[in-house]
Amino acid sequence: MADGKPEKRRPKDSVAHTITVAVLVSLACSVLVSAAAILLKPMQEQNQERFRQRIVLEVAGLYEPGVDVAERFAQIEPRLVDVETGEYIDAADPAGFDFVAAAGDPQSGVRVPEEQDVAGIQRRARTMPVYLVRSNGEIDQVILPVYGKGLWSTLYGYLALDDDGSTVLGLRFYEHAETPGLGDQIDKDAWRDQWFEKRLFDETGALRIEVVRGKVLRGPDAIHQVDGLSGATLTGRGVMNLVRYWAGSHGYGPYLERLKEQADDNG
Image (cartoon, rainbow, N blue to C red; front, side):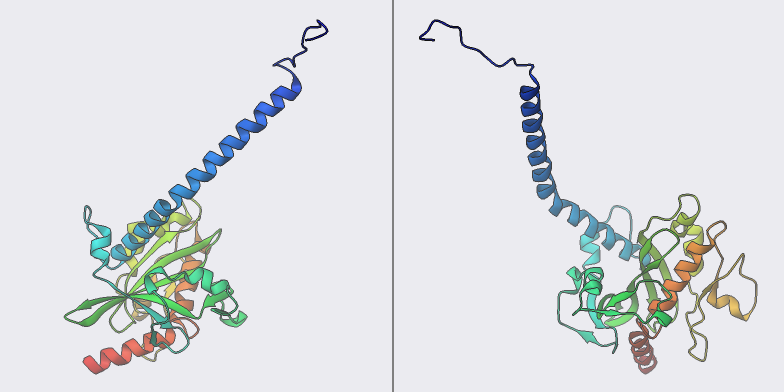
């Protein structure tokens, strides 16, 4: 200095210096984390989509270990359905249609009447995707996205039905948070396999599918019944209710009626 006094410097271990370094490090880490999240988001979304495609293939009985999921899934025909009328529409890309987001939108969603909301979803989309599996040009089976409340979470899955929309070919969930060791029995083959060839409706057209308490007993009603879940009664009831809702008149009911008419005409 000009006056000969030594220059005063801030100690590197001062409180202000420590706070400054901490803030800069935090900002740098935040930027890195944000950048990583942005860069990885497309990959994460693609992985989630591939997983859902795999579940669709599994519930349709078309998945094989080692197969290219995207290539095999390309054999399935996605369509959009007007839920109220049961008719196919071409208003959007069915492969990328987010029916959960659409349900919450005032324009694209509709409130589920309380007396019909057995699945506890409150709202549903006006249009829903369906996935068609064809054989020789004719519908062989149809896969329906379904969801509803379990005990602790919303269960998201796919229901596979035969060409007339009345016989279950498979039920598989791809997302839920039910109790490990109890509610997650819905993911076990032993329980999922029980749904195969169960009938949603009786001869009069009444919706009869049911998850019973305990074991299914032999008799005429057994074709509509699935064993209850030991220790997870409410989860099993949630599965029953969501299947009943989506197979009912406020769900895919009108679409299933059209499938039955078409199957009868072809039959």
